[in-house]
Every structure is written in structure tokens, then in C-alpha cells.
Length: 77
Image 1: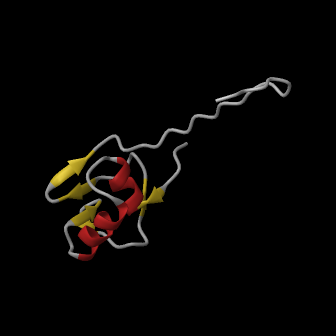
Image 2: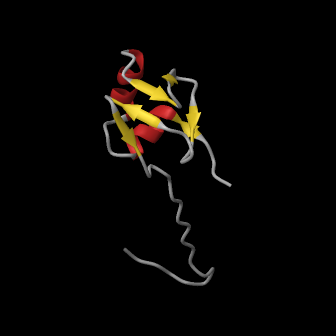
């Protein structure tokens, strides 16, 4: 099961632009989600079709890596 994230964050993680710039693109009407104009409250995942400046964004899924150390291990950086 995939988790939906805010549209601006999705665009930023795809490497298109920053979140602030993505927000401006949404305001200018240059972003569509599933063939309809996007707005700031849209949340998307990998199954949604996101188009920015007439180019489809693919594979902007987020990955979370959790690294933990044993409780008695001392790390010095």
C-alpha cells in the first residue's frame, strides 16, 4: 500500500524543482493530476498521472530508510 503525499513535495522529490517552485507551477496552472488541473490540496502517489509543463512525472516515490544501532554501541563521528 502506498502513502499519498502532497503534490508539491511529490514534484520536488521527482527532481523537477523545489517545493516552492512547484507551488508556483501549480498556481500558474502548469500542473495536472489525472487529466484535471491541480490544486494545493491534492495528494498523489505512484498510481496518479502527474503532468508538469506537458511532461509526465514518473517514479517520484519516497523511500524511508531506518538505521539503528545496538543500545550499547558507542559511535563517534
